[in-house]
Image 1 (tube, rainbow, N blue to C red):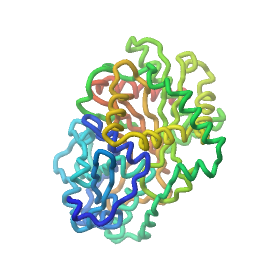
Image 2 (image 1 turned 90 degrees about the horizontal axis):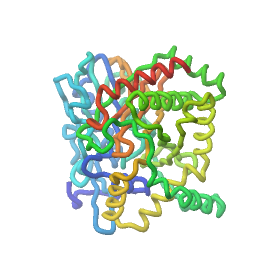
Image 3 (image 1 turned 30 degrees about the vertical axis):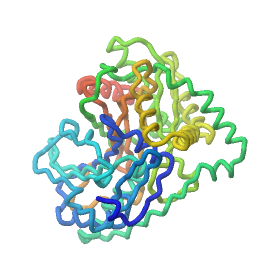
Length: 438
């Protein structure tokens, strides 16, 4: 693609620019939405559905230009982005991790920020993998894009499928939000950032066997919970006065503590990194781009072992969703982006992530709820959906829980050999036990 062939400049918000700056060797900053099905998608129909989606969403046919002082995204003309360059068709059954697909980076200066893989699964059936560069949108937007692709496929396959609602421009503005909320919130956000600046030098409990090793690949381990178990966890959480999300995180903390002890690791405080969707705070509707805040929640070994753990999890997640906490990281990133040119911002993120003297986060924990209106093509007989994100050195491991009306699928993503496949299996086995004991 060239700038002469571009048709429009596309908006980048503070988080989009930060995610571009955090893209470097070993850190592709990708998200993956995987649909496991029993029957294959039709090649012609999937190609046509993808072509329609790309034509309607300029960000999916975009490229990035960086200069010393500026980063910008441009949309290429629709005909210049062929679906045949986006889709990889494999006739060979493969595992996503060993295949290298999950760690494959985008060259944002020359290729569209979307890839699709269709391949047989080793356990039978097929998999459709919808991979995006994270700078295009967050998990909420990625699910909406997947829904739009499947809706177009259903219509082409002869099923009744309403036309997907268009994506509206985000126009999210932190400055407008802070002006609307007043000086008190601005002061609280600045105080929160100044008060927690020391966290970048913290050492937190890692869920890795070789913390200082370099990730040579990204693997995943997938766990299915059926509708009956999902309902049981809901009832149990309700009886305890917490949410099911609180229950999932709390039991994973217990599993993590048990795993570290069995591995002979010292007692250290855990820090969970939990993304938060800020669309309602920012007044954003159905749109792409990234509208993320983060909750950083610490739990000491004593707290993890205590019977009040789930109540503490609930309290800290609830407190973390308050505007002065959830908006702290976006405001800090926006300030950094305003003060530092792109090359300096990338250097800063790389330095922060790579310092051997610190290990800021124990794990990423996120939950994605599929929209009620999402429907899969009847002809492919969908089994499940799960989501994965590319991981930085810190924490090097992430658990994503994807919930639907039929149950839930949890996917543990981890960098190898920092965590071995056997080590990941032992960790997930402990979580299954903790869920059963909840």
